[in-house]
Structure formats: structure tokens, C-alpha cells
Image (cartoon, rainbow, N blue to C red; front, side, top):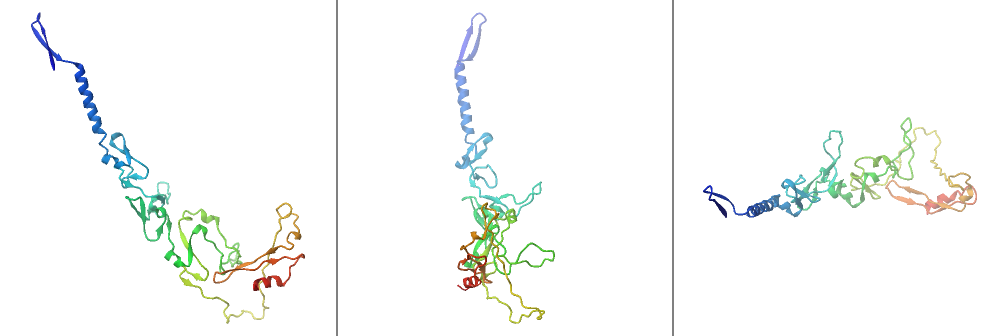
Length: 290
């Protein structure tokens, strides 16, 4: 209320608030009401997936946002980010940056899972898929795991000056340089089972052999048979081959593995090295026959 004060000497009446305490309390109530209204301004109360911060902006929890924005009302989920197969370069010319679903799928915002385009799969559509799942006749492998020289007909050696073909190896080659490629663990291909071929391992391999009509260009030359030499190196007392002796091989054995033209592997029975420098001439032949 209002208090009235009468001044008899001046014959005047003045008014003033009854109490300052009442006005202060009113102001506090109004301030609290304003604060309670501000707390509910963030959109959808951040959908329960974030906290409301300054300027009525939601700070979303991890993997939550709204579309491709980091804020909004935190009602939608992000999908996994992986190296993109195709994207535009940045100002430094760098490509294959991180992109949602690798740029090869659409994000289902309700579940946070990628719906990959045909030919892509895995978490975040991070890798290619193998054609026809290798037709049930092979395994789908990363290119980082693929080899060269694993079957006859694949020849390699140090590149000679005349670029002639080198010799075939008994073991497949892998290349460290492939691991440095951006897609070494993204691109995949079929490794076919024995007897199957093609990019999806869908075709059977036919038996192969020399054409019965093949003839030597110069029949006056003597026929030569292929001879392959095997070299064994003993460790020796120092483990580096120094001062090694033949005795380290005495009565030890080894086996030979070869791959047929149908991609089938065969391993011989153990071939025993005798007490003398040369093993029996018939031992390798007997091993191949058995």
C-alpha cells in the first residue's frame, strides 16, 4: 500500500511506498519467472539427447544432432564416418577424407546405420563387396592380402632390360607398396578355390597341357629338360650361415609344394637328406609319385 505523511507546519501531504521490502520481493519473483521461461526455450528440450546451453542452443550428446548439423534439437543420429571413395579436394588438394557412410550410402537417422549402395558394405559402407559373393567358390579378400605368382602362368622376376618373362616362384609374392594405397583395406576381390576362375569364381577351369601340335622352331636343336636347383643354407654356429657345415642337414628332411594349372596345391612326402653331400637320385622322384 501507500503511506501518507502530513506536515502541519507546511500544511502539505507527501506519499511514499509502504515498504521497500515488498517491491524488492516483487522484482525477485519476476526475475525467477523470467529464468524459468528461458530454461524451456531450447527446441524440443534437446529431445533428451543433449543439454541446453547459452543462447538457447542445444549441445548434443555424442552421435546425436539434426541432419548434417551438430546442433538443432538433437533428434537424429549420425552414421559412421569412413574414408570416402570419391569426394571433392580441399584447399590443399587432399581427397579421400572422412565422409558419412563413406559417401556410398544413405544414413538412416532413426538408427544411425548406413544403407549402402549396391557394391558396398561393412560398417559405414567402408569397403567394396565381391561380385556374386564369389559364387560360393572362393573367398573375398582385401587387395592388401592378394598375391602375385601363386599359380602357373604368373611369372615374375627382377625386370630385365629386354622385359622377358622371369621364372615362376614356388611361393606367392606380396607387395608392401599396396599397404600404402588409400584403398588397401577398402577394395576387395575374389580369391577362387582350386578349379575355379573369373572375377566372381563362377567358371570352372579346364585341364591344361601342351598343344600336341606344338613344334620347336628349330628341330635340329637338342631337346632340353627344365632343371630347377634348390639351395639350402645352414644357420651355422652364429645363426648367419658363417662356418656352417653339411652335417647340419644330415638326416634332415624337406618337402616340395607345387601348384597345378587348376590352382590345386600338392606337397610331396618328406625327402630325407642323406649322410653324404648328395641324396639319392630317386628320392625326389619317389616323393612326387607318392
